[in-house]
Length: 112
Image (cartoon, rainbow, N blue to C red; front, top):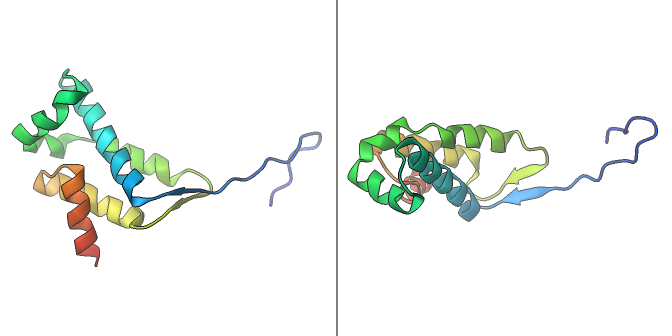
């Protein structure tokens, strides 16, 4: 473990875990927030908008940025399906115009 600079107390190191349900929830909420902001609609209407306009899913970028940020968190363990399945889920979402739940189910099946 790295030593702190002189005169400073050692930092405690915490290990964090993110399970499959939280992974899905993070990506879903980020997608919904992006749609709400991009199309100036309420978050409650974002899912309906995406279901009625599935090609809009391919233009979403925020979930990709969120994934990159998640990967940079020190001491964070992606449990369960892991980052590889999250990437595959995002690709499925973009390629097949799927919302996060369906994209995750497909990705998990493809991985197995």
